Image: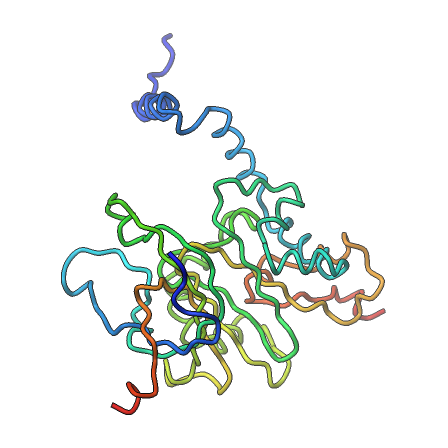
Length: 200
Length: 102
């Protein structure tokens, strides 16, 4: 029994990579490193950055001034990645991230975007009627909160630094990381205490 | 190339529709054309995506974070709601009082 035929696409890819390598544009190792960091990227990285910013004022300032440098401190390789901007929620101001043109998303620190983020419905509605979108998500903002929709149209990628919920005083970085969901990192949800913790 | 606008500058997005003239790739959302906003930050300089998309030499252009009031854009939303959008410099023009009066 003969081995299955190699798909033509694999041969094409190998030739393409060899051509890039021959021109000194990329090495096999760089491709392997990028694949590894793409596979590792998950919302837990962004959540941990938020938790650390809540606990460490110096890290918070770095995160807001230079998101990529703050991600590098978490061991994320940002070489070749778009710059990362971080927008801080504060009392009276809530950020919501959308890309109306396509699906720009801070993949380096959040991983692949969820399907709804790329849907026509979210992209069209988030920018036009963000309050209705948040209501459907079950996200209730404190009274008199202004919404700032961030349309990610160009070279930056944007992540939200939400406000630390009350009732988390004395929590560790791990505990705080656990309440920052993927959805909270783009502003469609808020970090929420587990029911048990809230009841204590 | 240095940024022509500083944070706080009141600007208008050019009311231009290159998509009506032929193939193009633009990053300026349609809903902002002709609208006024305020420069919030200068984000740096990036190769012009309008050239990159067609594999043309792409000069670096200043990119801004521009803040718009939401209600007049969509006639929806609550007062104080806003939109924050990355816009390249060649899409900005000053929103001068003289122009507003004209």
